[in-house]
Length: 219
Image (cartoon, rainbow, N blue to C red; front, side, top):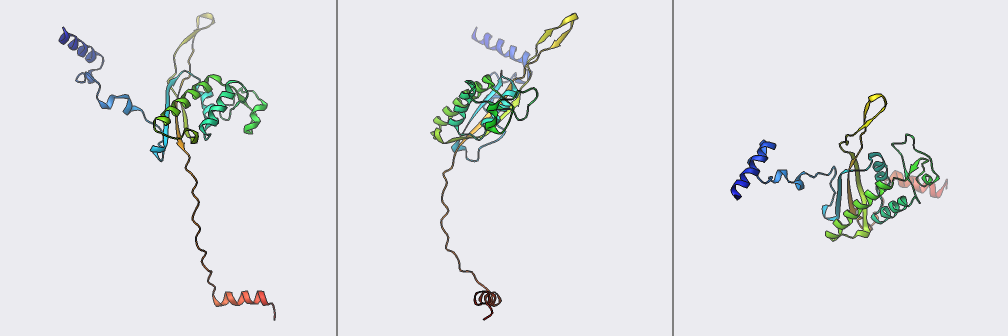
């Protein structure tokens, strides 16, 4: 019965995916770990950590502007900022997608006039930052010294729904999810440049004569 069950599974797999018929278990090329790619890699992989979210059910435009606001921030600073956005103490400035965006005095902090409070996007990014922090702890990195050096928000495949209108019409009713990836790196400690011995300047005879003339005057 066990052999019959295995043959049935293989036959079902062959009917769905003919090119996978000889692989009852997906080979390494089909494994998810090798399929995940980041658009940028860290200069020092041992001093960095990553996090990624795929097909997140949150608006692309709001998430793009929120991610742009925290790029370059330290981990703790970004977490505090996003928590303030959730409580509507600070706003997210809208720099690219500015159509029909209201103005708020909270945007003066960023030398902008338009801003909003995308709470759902802020919570999604807070969760990704928490994930990146746990990855950093697993690699024995200093979480107090991490900086968001790269964060990217990309459009995902839209979800298709329909809405019914007057006079028997039907219109598309799509949602706009997104992919998010981020890269955090430890700040390198500033090392003072060793002082070099100042070399004596060499002058030609003509330059020395001019200098003597400036010092002595017409005498």
